[in-house]
Length: 507
Image (cartoon, rainbow, N blue to C red; front, side):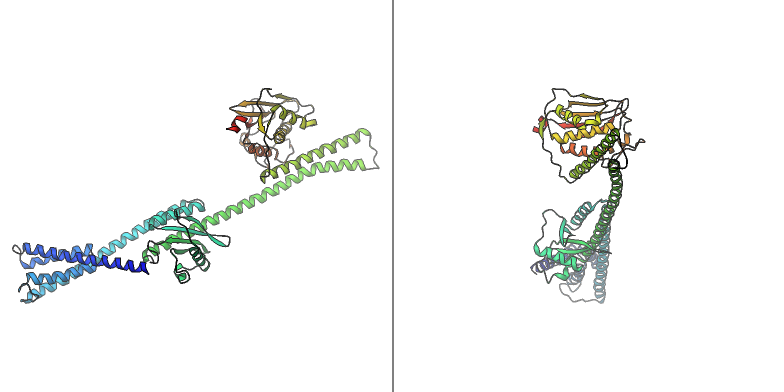
């Protein structure tokens, strides 16, 4: 109420000031008429007052211009129409002249004021149209919900010069998602926003319940319902904005609601696509894993069934071959299950890296020993200098990485070609390389081979789940290192692992 009284007082003083200026125009016209009355006829003095009326209509408005016309007629009658210094009129033609002056002055003031008001309205409409166009253009180019909210806050703040906040549903309540700098909401304001959202009504309808409100709330409504709330802090709390500003603000709110709904629909579509892709990946994974798991299981079951068959007499060599086959397939099955478990730990963030200073020679030796019989008949050339510095690493995990790389080289290179393991220091980092002389990797697949379940299509159909290199990448990245693949000159593939040294870790 106090704000309303203060605003009305300000308007009253502004209006009174315009009328005082109209009086000043009449006084100026009178002084000019007194100074030139000796040189022009009294009839032409009317034009001075008409000029004053036009000036008042252009700059002061309709009321002051009409007051200027009335005062001009009275002052002219008093000073320039005989008998002088009285309001009496001696001649009938003077009455007609004064009446004509009054009518012409009122008509001029009315027409001039109307033209001015129409020009101002046209300019305001043009400004509003430009603001809406720029707002719509920026909304159309915004990508994602965060960009849209930033555009809304910037444009509404610039167009209305007020603080705003945007509240969107989050669970069972509303939370501010974007606001002008430094703007906060109290409990009553939040409760009012929730009421507006739940009942999809303008905030003015809830003023009786929340009389201490300081924000104007507008529901962001679309054809599918209310997607959020736009809160605007008026320059004078408790005083509603002008009708034109209210309509423009509602237009902004409508555009913002449509953009927010578009962003949410796009997010839902993206999630649906991700869900579909995940389902396809899961189906492919199940097919791949079921095939890779069934193959060793079938071999193990077949071997054990043959050994258990009492009706079939097997010689010692055949029994030994069946047992070795079952053992090899069981080891292969154990390797597949281990890779699946390792990948699950990496994706769940459960991979714990315990770094200790380790000898690189010990890592390479343990990896070669872990490969065991799989390296039988294969030449492995190791070039690991004895003067390499100690490297902070998780010994078991890095041995696992090197074993996977060696297993990968065994699968994809001829049996009569050597496998090379090299170690050295480059640019302050340990560099480990496992190289083979296989058929190499297509250039477009050099980065994709480290993706989960991705396997390069080979004509010889080497078995595998496509998890080995993905596990290596996860372990190396957990060590703050890098891993990448490249093709060798002369044929083959080299996979390089880099790890930070002690000095880098200390820095």
